[in-house]
Length: 385
Ligand code: PLP
Image 1 (cartoon, rainbow, N blue to C red):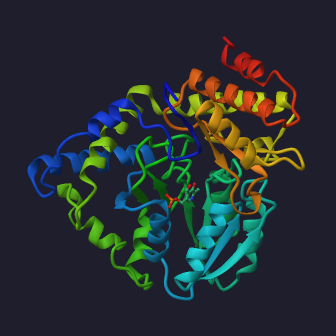
Image 2: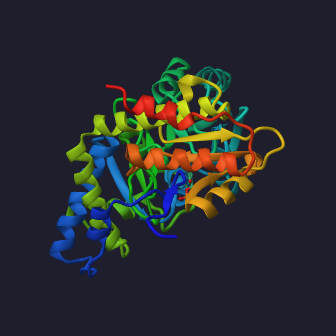
């Protein structure tokens, strides 16, 4: 294949050339003065991305590590946690919570909606003894393309008069969808490098509120590598307790500059627009999105349901082989039933149009019943004045 591979899965995403160039250099002494400046620059810039005056810690880990870190740093064995199973990643997070000794209460969903604030409010009102210590919500469920309005979840907790922490997995949200950690009263925000943050995989983050830091002081779950106290001990000097992923941090600094040059509002508006164009294409093809409620549509990815009797994996194979385009697979109970189009991170109009035309040609080649004109519908959205 000549030309560039199209990586349009919902993470890892395309890494901008200037980020690749920033990372492509010799490592430096992680206890030296040049590193100290880099560490401080990354931590303060990340706080602006998380929209918090609280703390941000950086782990060398995939996103799952940071989901575990959020729990072990704030909770004690046997504590109750309220989880909402919005899809595969919420399901996985529940497994993490069970394995480390938390008592989970799970609100089930049909995997076609974001988390329901009313159901959370009801569960918390019933928890008269405040056994539930944390409400865990996935901001953007990458397996379904449904996102959750976080201010409504905060309100549901406050209206129940419940003291639980609000812990949010925004691994595929942060950097693509607006997330105002302080203003929305989020206690821990979990993020990963490889999605909207436009970096390679391998780095994960916890944003930490004052309330979460207070809970950390008495939290008794076993932890060592993940301990926030260790991570925060030398933050003012820009240093880490262990060897950090030095070269990735050069990339983090570059990404912070890129976000600030584009402007956060413009970044979010770009994602909204590309998502709208994608949905226009899906609708014109006569296919259905997994997300069943327009208010929950994710701006970072679109999950599309296959017509009954047709294999999503066979379609993805045809598209990869003919057009060198990678799309996301269906996960867990959506395996082979769904394909996912990532439109998050470093993507522009023509990258999206290349992707959508790859899908439209693939649908024809794979013999999947659909109507033509999806690309045309998307172009009409993108060419709108
Ligand atoms: N949570 C969400 C919402 C995700 O999208 C992912 C990965 O795609 C994870 C958790 C797990 O992250 P990782 O695979 O980096 O461990």
